[in-house]
Image (cartoon, rainbow, N blue to C red; front, side):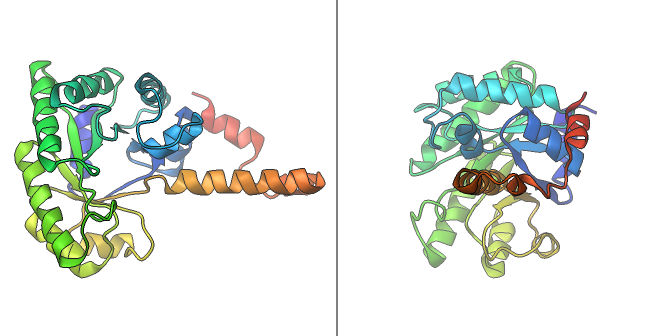
Length: 264
């Protein structure tokens, strides 16, 4: 079975995706029990000293995808934001580069842009993949709630409309971050025929409840990287303040254990 087929079948049940930011974090997540790895655009950008929002050079993002693919034998899905592209053909070219780097899927978002533009990008990406005789899993992100474009019932209706539009264009799953209440999630799963992906968010139900609501995929997004960076910042502040070595004590993983995880 190909990595693409493995990744696709993971959506038949309930897939929890931790989001990596480099080769080392990908290996950690595989060791922790992940069945697939996704990247987070924010986490990757922070790792390289850039802000999120397509501020990082695309070549550097692609280099990171390649390193993650080389570090793990799990299927990898890459967050390409809006495709680093203002038109459909450029987005398709970018997606093919990600496939060539070894990923099996992408996350691509509409942001504050026109939904019709993302639909055109999705269609162009699927056409480009078919022309190369390969497959790509497209997780289309609907940013109505995440970007505060609309709220409440109006936002829910617009999210469903966009999800259906992206499904018709060739998306394989629909990602609607920042929706947490059970009634809204049930309405989304009932009206969008593709697997629904949600984002770890304050107030979101646990995995068992999400599964009962028909959700198929849960992503950590930038959450793990944010906590990691927050801890590193706090430890650095404390160490700089008093120089005490005790700040570094208490880690669950030892140096030998971490070396073992990283050793191929």
